[in-house]
Image 1 (cartoon, rainbow, N blue to C red):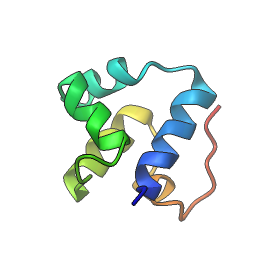
Image 2: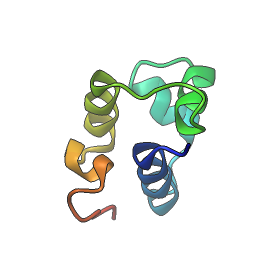
Image 3: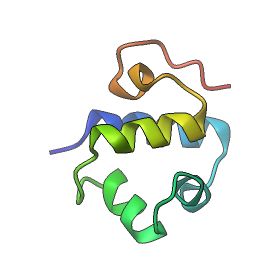
Amino acid sequence: MKSIIAENVKQILKARGLKQGAVGKLAGYDIKVFNNMLNSRKVITDIDVLKISKVLEVSPNVLFGIEDKKVV
């Protein structure tokens, strides 16, 4: 099952031209672990959402799809 959070993170990365590995590293993840999160092979926890949203400088609600994504 695809994660709405992972899909929203991917959309933000693409819209901003960011590299998955660089964002994962800034959030404190090994590149492989972050890739597994974005490809639904590892569950994204509440703590993960907070870390990723902080690096992307968006509200956690954006990752859940609750708020509009203002990515640029």
